Length: 281
Image (cartoon, rainbow, N blue to C red; front, side, top):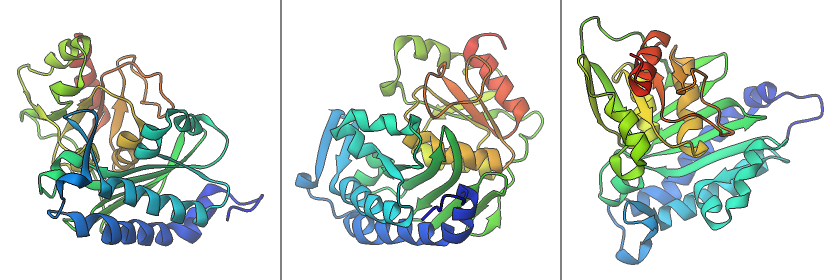
């Protein structure tokens, strides 16, 4: 547990390996046995046909909630499925306790369709600051981790986002039109410009990983639910990238952001994409 005199950094130095083990075990026990094996009775809709939840989501979140709060007594979990059941639990992100922000299956649509582009996302935060994150793609056996001030890693190898190649179109993953308001659609249309190559995003967590690896240049997202962004934003930051909202401020996991926002391989690219979104480029 975190003692009265222990910092989150000190906790992470002692227990990061245990969090890695927890995410791997949750995926092995609750997600992968259901991958390409889901029955119709194991899939439900939440807000509509594009917003799916499965037994894998629910059981993996339950598993992680039990293990993570045991690893760090006094901490709380803000998980996608728990918040769906009780929206008031989201307020814990703004509270005083250390908070585990959990998306048990990010990319549920891909998971349901038997595609390997899904992952489990975990971030540890307090007072709106993300201290560590874990992005685990179990079907690909890839684990990306980041600790604030200590870099980003994929399977133990340091990640450096770098900068886009001069003269190459900017590769930008954007919010799917199904999840945007009319105003956000107009902002995102700014990305269709000379020198860009926008496309609809898949799993948000894996899109952030692609930016951190330098395989994609930027994201442009129109929603701010912390479980989709907290882990990936720290990963991008620690790989040398940057993120900006329309008001030229970094994205805040506590909310109140001006949307859409971008995360990019470097600060210059973030400013370019923000300009396209705001119509000032």
